[in-house]
Length: 173
Image 1 (cartoon, one colour):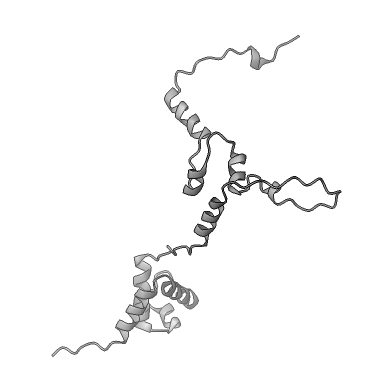
Image 2: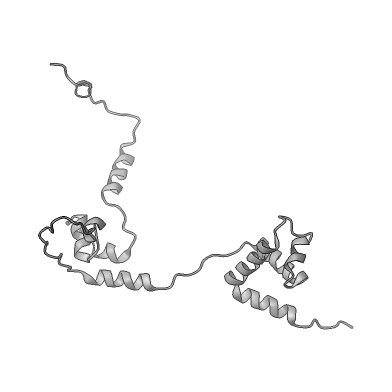
């Protein structure tokens, strides 16, 4: 009876592979880094992933945690999982309910462009579109959108800028 090619081939040592790198790569795969500090602190290395998540009250398999109701005969109900670490879910919910910081900013070039347009033309978007500094040939609507984006991302800067425009300049004698 013929043998498969795979089993007949002899395993050879690969001298080109760095064994130290291979070992660290396998170690990282077997123990991945858990980003959430609450989960990382409550993690038990002796238990499986599914068991750890079940004790924390988290779902390992979303299809099992929220099954789709079927028209077939109902199966026997399994007893609910015992949650021994409910504080993990509470901490995660508290962290998720905190408002996220809006990190969107505009480039300094765009801020200077918008300030120039407001300084020169106030709210006349058609005149802004015809301005010679409108290098990208933005339409009035695009310029209006950029100005509203500036107002939204930098409200304090915008207020200070508008108030500096409204203040009369001192006369030099």
